[in-house]
Image (cartoon, rainbow, N blue to C red; front, side, top):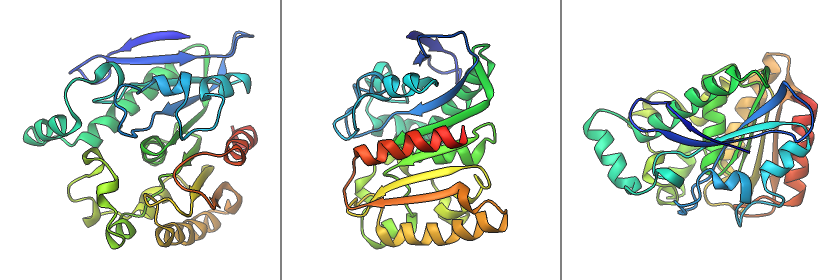
Length: 263
């Protein structure tokens, strides 16, 4: 375990954890792990090491290193060692300065990726991103924006924005989630289409109010067409389970198998 303090945004230092397999020298394939929200601001990057109530055990640090992967997880704005100011306070201050909290969070993740691929013990050609809930959203945004991400795995937050409006689920997500003007330009499916033809596994619960089923169907239909047109239909996989907003043993097995196949 390496405890890091990274300069990613020029505003405040970003604490991070880096873990790697206990044997060998690398370079290892690596996962940019994105922590969840869950209203537990004290956890942040600790999720990588200790897990969460909605995650299957063991924690992903143990799971990933056991499978031969290194992993990096940062504390996002308002979480972990960066907590103190509330999420709404940070959002409002950034808004006044013409910034968007989600955009600033994504920027930190992109810069964390810069750090990760520059490490000599990491194989820069074998990078995946992974997360649940808020971490899921970060995973697919990151993969859409940066082709250095070769594999994307998201759990329990592939949310169609229009479906969220239709089901009156907007308050299920924190204020950090909302980007002014986004729906004038992009749907969730269109953002995710930018990942194609790279491998993308999405795992969702059909009883999860944060990912309305009608929205999942829209996204799946569009992405199936996109991946088929790019002659990579097997690289997009959506798995739905009769559960809510959490990871099961079966889902964990899917994650491990997908990374093994594609990374």
